[in-house]
Image (cartoon, rainbow, N blue to C red; front, side, top):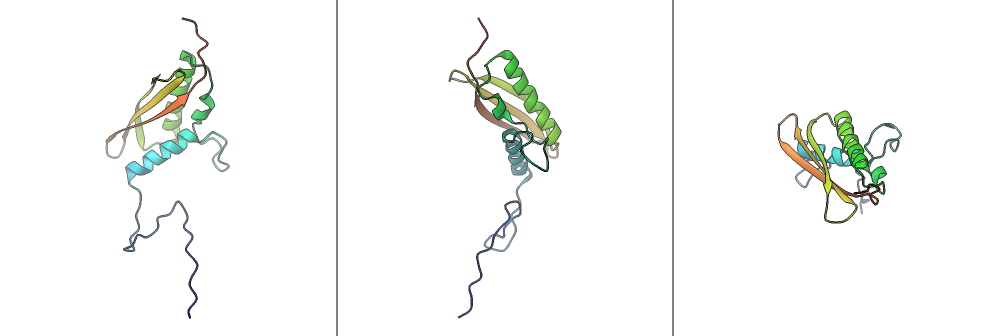
Length: 134
């Protein structure tokens, strides 16, 4: 009886052949969206080989919900995308209220440079209580 080969171990960044033996590469759009998500979730200093990579929006969680915090969040996202994802042209980063108190919605509108296709990506963060008085 021939020995059964062990299951293949795939590297997550490389494509794996499909049932017909063809390699399935991600589309440009899919690759760009994945990179933006990774940028937003990665804290600078978290990656050993790229210590300045990342936006780290988590650091804003729990900060006071003020105009200053929202402006810093908007600029941090805009600067991080401009620095690390050169395949896009950022058109707008908006930080707005949601229905829940203390939550903000960050909406990023951009175009893929190669195709000109407009795209949008958003996330919701919970900030701390506002320290501003009415």
